[in-house]
Length: 440
Image 1 (tube, one colour):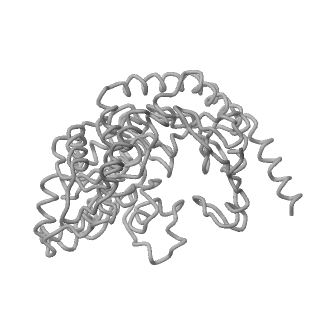
Image 2 (cartoon, rainbow, N blue to C red):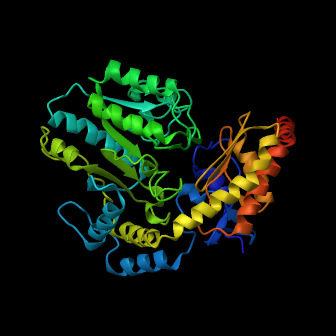
Image 3 (cartoon, rainbow, N blue to C red):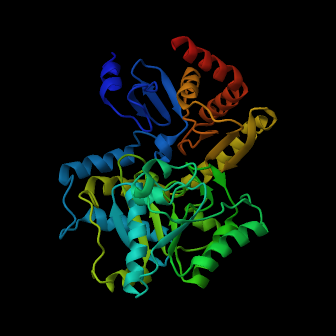
């Protein structure tokens, strides 16, 4: 039975990056299980996005569902100001056991963007505590993405991000060239020079360098050399700049390592995690720092860290995260991701010969077709739905980040659909253009 009022949705509901006057088509989902989304009309779609890279264990996993149901019966929410609870304590214990040993202090936020805001505020407040108040700038690399809130926007790509739209309200930051060296390859000299020159010239102003380790996500879908991370750590040490690793998209196995920093064997001063932290069941994020950062903040003029979300350390979200981390601790994710990676490498290889495809990239449980031209997300989404899969392209990229529990035949259906759509792209785009003209 169709209970979804599409007319109301079009009239009143904003969707991500959408227009209210010319809304893109949306598809009603009634339920989900495993790696499958079920539309309200009963049609099944294999999920190639893990609901924006978060639902790594699949939908309706009994361990996570049971943990949330039990928590809901005891304590669904309580403020964290002046109060603590078992769920937050045990989650933090589990998380710290997985992270580099130098990371010891946990700030539990409620979304990835807020985790980045918290990290940037930590860096600024740290230098106040160390009596170096001129360190007010943040350095990052081009083609990055760190969230949609204002401080997070300031460290997203300045050309393809949202900077110009919001004018002077977005704080100008410093940008180094994006690394060109591919994952698995040694650094090219331009990568070394580009980062070193910015730090050498501006380190007295720079509070922190923030980057997405190894994999740039929504800004570029680019996998770069782990040696760049090693270089970044060395240069931050040399020039007295904090290193912030934004592992919101890369953490919890997505790149084939538990955390992307593990590919380089480095430890950041501050790390942000989110998305898959709860297995994608409810929003939660964490910003984790080392003892040195915490000590600097404690010695700042305020004497305390100046941030405190209403839903900080929400017990229900913490319970989901505890269950998800328990599943990660079982170790199955590692073989699952390796199997997904091998299958995608084999099945997406055919796309190398397609005239519409500029590059094919696979790392861990991420498969990317970079196209020569920007695509219409709404049009291509509909094409994928016709083929029984859920894939959401953007810019020049058709990509998948499936749940780790996906079956081989389901993954094959996703990769086949990617190649089919990339092959038929000129006809699809032309047909869409003709329809637009006919509707005037």
